[in-house]
Length: 284
Image 1 (tube, helix red, strand yellow):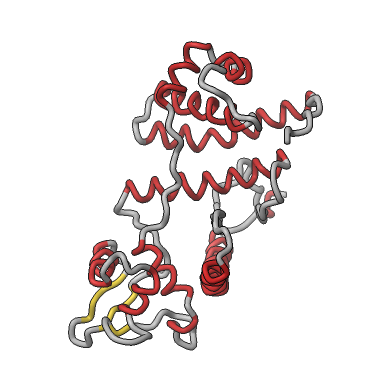
Image 2 (spheres, rainbow, N blue to C red; image 1 turned 180 degrees about the horizontal axis):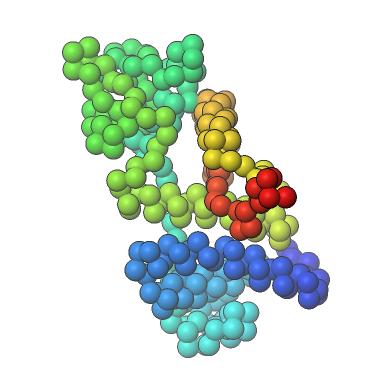
């Protein structure tokens, strides 16, 4: 079914959209400059994204010969569209690695936490609760020993050889020493977040949860307290959602339902100096 014709945009809407695009692109430009990505390379990625979006916007699909329609929709020349069409490959969303899934399930399982909600050490082998049983609940395609070695390599866990138990070393998966993995997280997390916001604005699908709290005139000590509180809320959300989502996956599998939907739930916080710092009350 074709989408309803879009209403003619108002001048103020065009201005607001331009400003929004500028805000979205600014951090991408900062990252590109910091990592030595030249404008031409970034512009080529944007051209490819435009071609992909134009194809996706057609409910009946487009054949290889429909270069003119894409050119009209995007403003790119026919030659550029033809070149990109011959070359373009859809960007794949990277699935979490088995090691990442083990880490997340360990953090989110109430059965693997103490009374204060902290992950407990697990014996390396044996019946549940053990690292071996946890690893096999995630995948049987990778040996638990290999998953343990990967978690240790990432600094997320360590093996206590004296007790033959595995201890979790972190409460968040942020592999700052692995740039490729960090870039993967950036693309997947920010990409899905932005996709949810755009879908809500365009009313393309069922509304996605995409909300934020804004505050200014905070001191550094107050900001530190808010960050600590936000971290605690994320842990609570993780503990609540992971077991429920896993139970739903198992229920879908047993019921034989078509499982063709993916989900990402996130929480973020950001802080920066105010553009116009508040005057000291003594000066007012």
